[in-house]
Length: 110
Length: 114
Image 1 (cartoon, chains in turn orange, brown):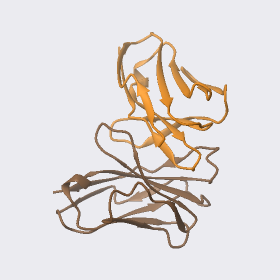
Image 2 (cartoon, one colour; image 1 turned 45 degrees about the vertical axis):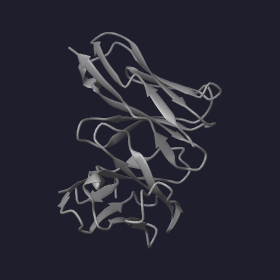
Image 3 (cartoon, chains in turn yellow, blue; image 1 turned 135 degrees about the horizontal axis):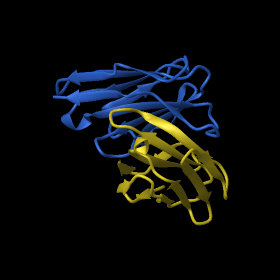
Image 4 (tube, helix red, strand yellow; image 1 turned 135 degrees about the vertical axis):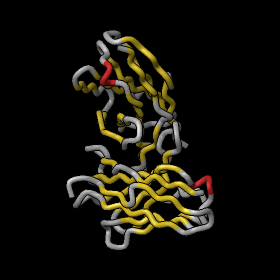
């Protein structure tokens, strides 16, 4: 059974700092997704990573995938308050259903 | 439509009642998913449709939960004899089927069982 673990689950950081969120998963997969969720809102797709070594960047966020290590990272550069949200990674275990991690609640202090 | 539409956005029901939650996916998307999200948790997979058929219903918690997609577009999640533990946000997502472009989620239905 596919398990997806994120860490940290909670992160409070200062504006301007860099940080990384980690997503580990338990079975072979080459499809990984990152989502953002604001309080009371639905999930917004951030990145779709489809192969080993994939790296995608959008603004201050950069995501990467290492399928051999079963690890994805979401790196935040020079954080700003607007990035405060909960970030989820989700993995396709090969059966076309995606399994989510518990999420990382990110709070960026002004 | 332009996005995934879910109705109602909020539903309050009494314990023991029957409820139906509706999902209208993006036009042309063959794959449709239902997830349940409890407060402070990640979305939990319930069921996945490819076209009209349920390709995987392994996430449905028990036989009080049932979902249909009779014409391969709109789907309805049905919950019988609701319990307080069923209270959650029910999310629907659709995709073109291959997952290569990700999954688009609706705004969800917040179900409260009192």
